[in-house]
Image 1 (cartoon, helix red, strand yellow):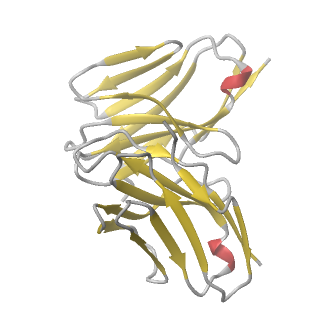
Image 2: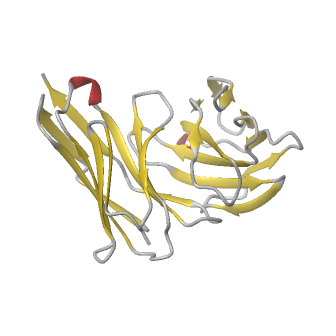
Length: 111
Length: 113
């Protein structure tokens, strides 16, 4: 059973636009929800993360929105830039347990 | 502070051979995770070690094994290599089981011919 479902699989956005990637989870014991950015041939890099007691977290152009009742969280990239073109993974973690990753979203930002 | 390091960067083997991949976690980190990422696919959890013990393993056959050394570095061994084992193998480290921030290394690209 897929613990974390991520959509869309791919996304094309114009430069300056807003990119939105969504994730849903099942296990209410998860207490940490990170997003990772991965460029081709590189390891994923931790981008931003949120805990379930907060509904939103913003770091620069990146914002996580978290809806505990719906068991959903999303990544918003404001003013998307060509350099943001990468694969983004959401994940969910219960402290003391393993991480569960979404299937990834390939983002392309067109100049 | 040095990040997670992995060696080798690339590894080419033939079917049936064995591969050994190595990972050094961030200094002070006791947990090491291994993931397989086949081309264009997501991260598949392989193994998790903490304080020298195997904490959990993913849905992979027993020919995937590993260990963690007293200095918290780790080794992933893949026996009887198959063509579908070709993938990017990623190692990640975390301060310990009571923490959440996981940091990835650059990966080892394993190619099985």
